[in-house]
Length: 436
Image (cartoon, rainbow, N blue to C red; front, side, top):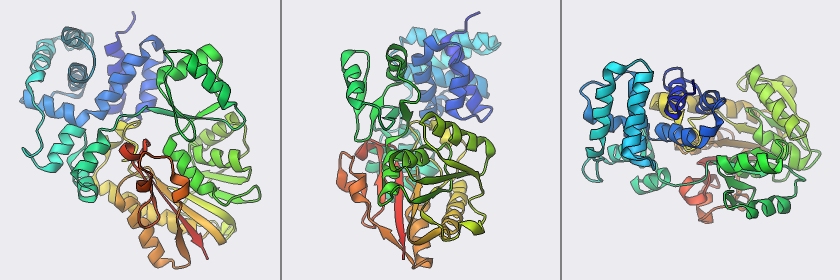
């Protein structure tokens, strides 16, 4: 029996909420046999995750006791459809009631019906009615601890604008050698193909990407799905390198930046990860883009004597909270906390210290995150520089020019700082340091 689109979405969300799966993997697994419902399910799935805090707030206002995960997920789907999607009220409610019964929860079907019908009565707190942190948390879908941190660093207006920015989900770049002119001719022919050109590629919808591959045989080797922020970071890494350069990417998986450097510079790139299965992702990515990369199993925190002072460029795109990448990975915050961010900053500092030992005299050390939190970015680099005077910051402002407000791309300290609402990218941080 064919599954309803609500059931497909519920299955995917349960993989995230109950099993802790990554959102992209959960959606792919749930929808693989039901591609015709891709657009609806994708929008509902990511929308529920993006608005998890907001939806929970609304449901809590209407229930004395929070329902268990399966029913809570049905309610979140229903409230999201009613508030944020172009779905008729009766269809949204009816679909969720039927889903509840499909799940063997007929006993709470009337409860689900009642909560959804009352959900429109719940008003989100206005500015001034609650604390700034609670206002941002509920209205923008952030946990309170993160709202407090961001407001403290950037102010409430900046944070609200950042979280409410609207952008395409998927950024692609063409492989070097692929004719961009022919690609753009194809884009211009069809009204149902939507794309927005950037300095290094295109923002496209999921539907556009599917149509391009189906209609025009756009090969998987012709393009790479890579965020604009990631490419800008890679451009910063590439500056000053040539085909004779030796590059080490210590935290490379899935390999986007390492592949970009090898493809565009043609130099020797060593890409590392601590997990064997993630090395396979790097190798697969490199093979698809037709570049040679040396993928090496390595713990970024453990010294390799044969690498000391050997590389012209060492890259630390370190594990981070992912707070700049919430649009494409909204499940990131489900299991994060302020304490975990503090633990991450210690790990980031340890990786950076170890990486610095591999940089040759005159070489450069690159540090980056997809976080917008200062304790993972500015503070890590400044602390490193304070204890390692042989390294100094290199200004990369010219390489970060791809923004709506270019002047905001680089801080007064020479760091590249990208934000969704000012640069049309994910939130990202890049620091480049030169060794004496």
